[in-house]
Image 1 (tube, rainbow, N blue to C red):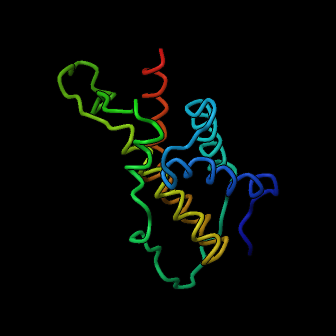
Image 2: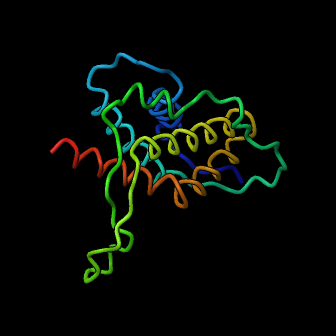
Length: 160
């Protein structure tokens, strides 16, 4: 059985990934409305997660090699030099505890999102579509989703 997806989902997945990861791959990009464009594509990738279903590919593929990636954090810093740290709540359900906060980092959020999306793209292009979609499902729910939510919240709060 092949992975389930509709054509418009797959038509949008790689271009949306490319729109997000460019900020970590290339320094000093000149892009009009950079933050708005980033926000739009983060929401788009978030939505695509709900559109994709997959069947696990049992093939044993070589792992993604992160060692050849550029300095993603540094590139993001040049593209979003006003991104920084933010306060976050450790347990949102503990409404009586006003002291347990944590520190978040918008640059780190985008760097982690970028690395996750690069691996999804690499797996689709080098392993198999099923392997890439499986990894998308796995990484999004377990890692990428929280970074996207945190970054979108930070951008909203910063621009209020």
